[in-house]
Picture 1 (tube, rainbow, N blue to C red):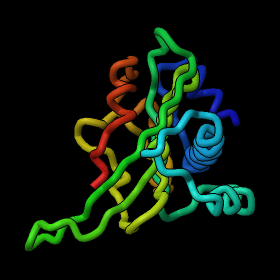
Picture 2: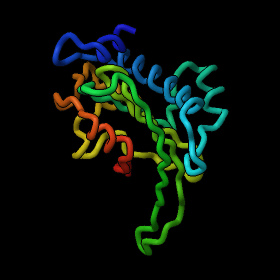
Picture 3: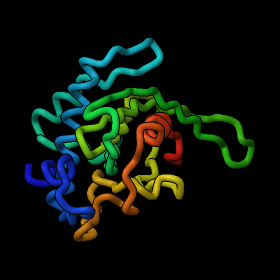
Picture 4: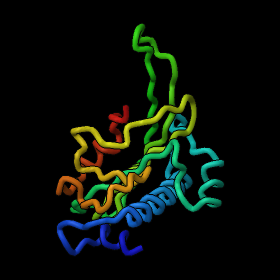
Length: 179
């Protein structure tokens, strides 16, 4: 849990994270997202994480390789030391020739802060599954992918050297750049 302490309470401006440390962060973030699913108020439009995902996590002690993406970023905790939001995400996959929607995917997007870190967990919860982009778009260069693991060696946190403010965390929590 040293990696978690180093991103939540960084003593340096950058933290170097090994693949094993990124895995530890991913497991902790996924576990936290599962708990937040149980305690955050949810509207009818936010799909529930299937019970099987809880059972698999209990048995495997890691997020599933398929259907879950996890990222982290630095957070400038000017106002909140901890906050959490869940949003539904519906992606329609289109036929490239006719542009008609052919499949729909349902995801639960959980974004939460923990002192100087922000985590984001995307879980496929229903409908058609299709691989999503784990690498953030150009407008999200500050996100460090944690899961699925890529084993690229050491990674620097915060990615891009940027700490997000409250408005940026709010924008991040409703992003849709996963295709």
